[in-house]
Amino acid sequence: MLQIPYLRDHREIAIKALTTKKLPHAAQTLDALFKLDDERRRVLTLCEHNQATLNQQAKAVGLAMKNGLPQEAEKIKGEVAVLKEQTAALGAQVQALEGEIHQQLVRLPNLPHKSVPEGNGPDQNEVVLLSDPNAENIQRPQPHWDLATQYRLIDFELGVKVTGAGFPVYTGQGAKIQRALIQYFLDFNTAAGYTEIQPPILINEDSGFGTGQLPDKEGQMYFVTEDRLYLAPTAEVPVTNLYRDLLLQENDLPILNTAYTPCFRREAGSYGKDVRGLNRLHQFDKVEIVQIVHPDQSYAILEVMKNHVAQLVTSLGMPFRILRLCGGDMGFASALTYDFEIWSAGQGRWLEISSVSNFESFQTNRLRLRFKEKESGKNRLAHSLNGSALALPRILAALLEFYQEEDGIRIPDALLPYTGFTKITRPSP
Image (cartoon, rainbow, N blue to C red; front, side):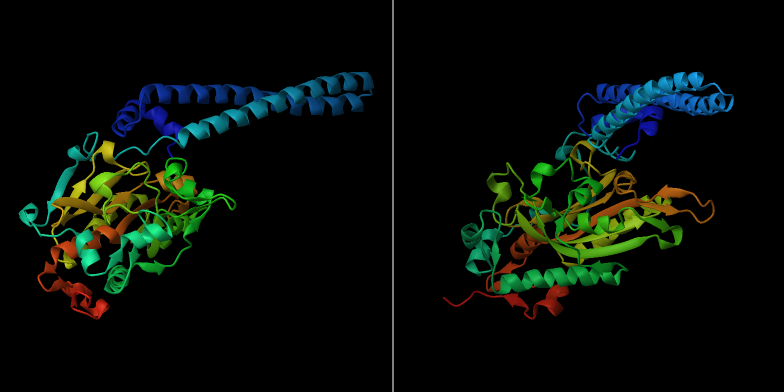
């Protein structure tokens, strides 16, 4: 969540940044916010002045009684009663203004980092790494949805029967390779120093607010009405919220966590080839990495996280690229995001498999997550970062397509210790 003092001191920078993030009428929005804050200050000043007067009047009542002037004391008491009513009304007005300011602030997206390229959509994203310059020339004859059916790995229609579109059923070797990918990703992350967490997959409203899903993505999450709980859209939400309302010590940082969870997203309005097969699901598996870090180190750590995910994707042996997202394609809470895309050789297109982001203090301000500096003793907001390491559906889609051969689908070397088989073979009729 952004803070008014910063927005006031950096108005023009903030307007440009918010416009980059596709906030319409950014200047008018900020000026309306400042006007509300000016009114809050004015009313608060009146309220504080009244309170000071009440304190003086209380002393005057005591002095009048001490001097044997009961009528004077009663007169002052009458004035005090009126002043108390006025002060209470002013206090209520301050609270109402603060509430309105808060509601407007939480709807402002995070400001992009200065290195974020300008642009309105995916076409303006900047490619920062391409693992194979000839990636787009690599073609395979069958898309993953045909392979999944032929090898009886995934039953899309059975998922529709049980739940609906976007909820596939993995069977046989398809289920085993899902498990293998999850375990491999977790082991890769823990070997790099991340502590594994098994968090809840239902979250409350405070958790959704803390990481910026609420109120921004309310319509994209599944909601359990009776209990007022949401199905987690990503492990980032419950894991980051483990540290909500904490005051850490500087020596506690950085904190590194990894977690596997199923993820749930409504993805309303998605149609066509972009949603066929595993391309876009309502329920999918993902392994996440989350770091809570010192603000002076967050961008260096972002590069470390980006390189960690790059090594993980490289180990699977498929062509991929890394993009620095432009302002118009970034998420609500992010200050800088790297997207990882893998080449789908059966579809002839790039598929997003990971986002690695620095949120700076945007989430930690909402979470009230601070740390105490060792030297100064002051409390500061920590920075939070997260990344997918990795999301499974499109990884599996690309793997099936890339490693397809005449007599089966080969398993990449990195997964052999986890699958128990070297090739996915056609099942008996």
